[in-house]
Length: 193
Image 1 (cartoon, rainbow, N blue to C red):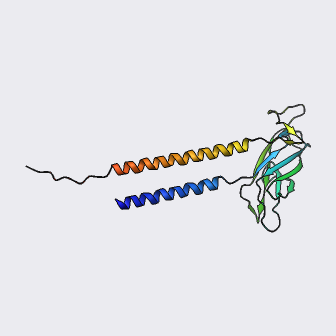
Image 2 (image 1 turned 120 degrees about the vertical axis):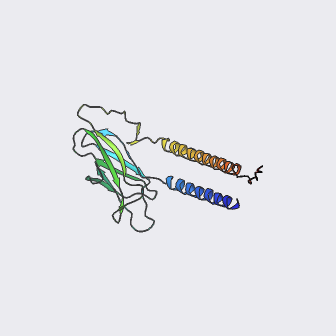
Image 3 (image 1 turned 135 degrees about the horizontal axis):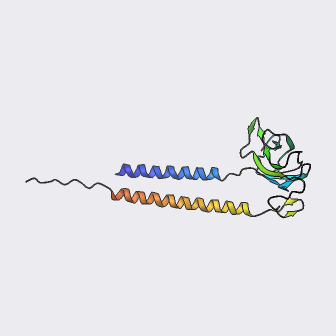
């Protein structure tokens, strides 16, 4: 009986540590990429911004390469992240047929992708006279106005994580109570007679 309780305690402790480690890993930032315009014509110049890129604690900065239409696509710009991991660069959209394309930001150190990269953003090349399928966001000073959606998503993620941990704890408590109730009573001797 005592051994069961000790094993159950270690199991709950191990599960708790696993959940805490998973939550810590899941909350790390991934690199993001934003475009001043999500649609336009070939030859247009747009501003590409990004955040959460790796910043070298010592030594030279690890540059971020912005590729056209894939990780192995032509490099449109190379930029070093600032001290907080943010980037900003002007790129010219290459000559291509109307359709959807992707800009990809890669950051490699010693031939290995930095954690959280590559980052991607879609761009639509419009045919002459065509309008974007989605209306562009409000533009202020040449860049897309910031929105609180990232903090809202983060708050929702944290709230769901706390709810999940509470439900897990309730389940473990219920299991422990059920395990105590199912103890086998001592056998009674049956008289034959």
